[in-house]
Length: 83
Image (cartoon, rainbow, N blue to C red):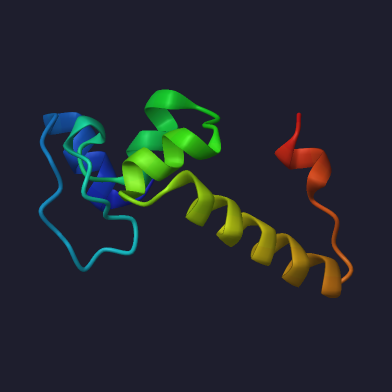
């Protein structure tokens, strides 16, 4: 876990560092996507949409685009997505 998220986790405070690449506007997970994953483990697309403040359909579009890019590079990560 990164130093910033470790401090927030240890002190149970919301992260105020909006320029951090892991910052999300979701205070239930201390505004940190790393803490969100640490607390909740695997999440479905609806849970991710809630945390990111976007629709389920948009999260699905992003996932599909990422899978296309990975496939073009010769990688197949479906085994990790659907475990």
